Length: 125
Image (spheres, one colour):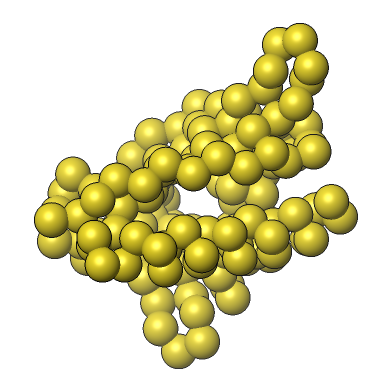
């Protein structure tokens, strides 16, 4: 059974700029995968010689985007990016929801830390 992970990162960016990095093939290929292709609602993520397909199952511009891996055993699992902006400070937070096997949760956290570091670098943060 997969465990649900919720991670949150502060991103010094506007929600619209961040959303483009999370929801477009060109944005995602800068930090998430080596290359990303889109056909309809199906994103193909390419790393080295492997590829994985995910369907965008929901989104709201500048707020959130949710994907479901097509090859996943469990249709309940997904990965999601949510963008929150604090009303008073204007700080922007990126909340990530993902699922991993219990023995892989630390590795999944480390991977997301690395990916978000790459995201910030590509955004010049």
